[in-house]
Length: 331
Image (cartoon, rainbow, N blue to C red; front, side, top):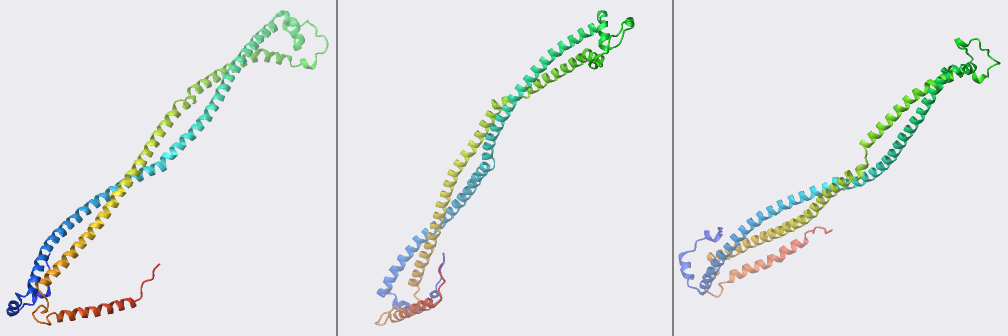
């Protein structure tokens, strides 16, 4: 670092220089000058050290800031994941559990209804089998030659080989549709047996389909597996959130310490520069005095005294002018 002084451009006459060379004041000044020269060397070393320290702390600060930003980003990723998915997933498993419980209840009722339907179809088939047997017997009776007279009386029709059989009296109105009724009783049971076979086959098929698509196993295997996986996933996210919060606090603390250290180093560097400037200014003044105050005689320091007095008068005036200026309003 180089410094200049106006006194460097004001050469002294050889006579004056020789005249003041051996004065006691000059001897003292020379001693003080050497002291300040050594002090400047020491403070220049401190200044260089503080500059390097400032550079190093600035690099550390950038690393700490980068680490803090990445740590905060990772923390926010897991926190947002928990808020957007984790909480919803756990709540959804509870709702799924409720729905499955309800559906399993419906399924149990359906199984019972289907089993009752199959049993009813089996019972109906047995009854219709009896009805078909009765129809076969009735048909045999109608074709039996021993029953032709009774058939003639019931239907009002004569057979070819029984035309001479007289019809006695008038037939009741209830017997006018006997022929059709007998036909239905003989033919209809066979069709009903075929229908009940189809009904029974369909009910058995439905029971098979229901058994294949039984949801009862959902509450035994599916739901526990879903709950376990969802809880493990949510626990992992929460663990990462807790660890991330700890890491974020640590990173923030490290960044805060780095900022404090960097701030201290900046002020230390500033103070070091001021110290060097001050000491160098004193050294320059001692090496090249800007005035002729230092001389032998009674009034050697009169000029310096007058200049100091002038400064003492100027300071109050400046201070007074500054105090008259309007001050900014405070909140």
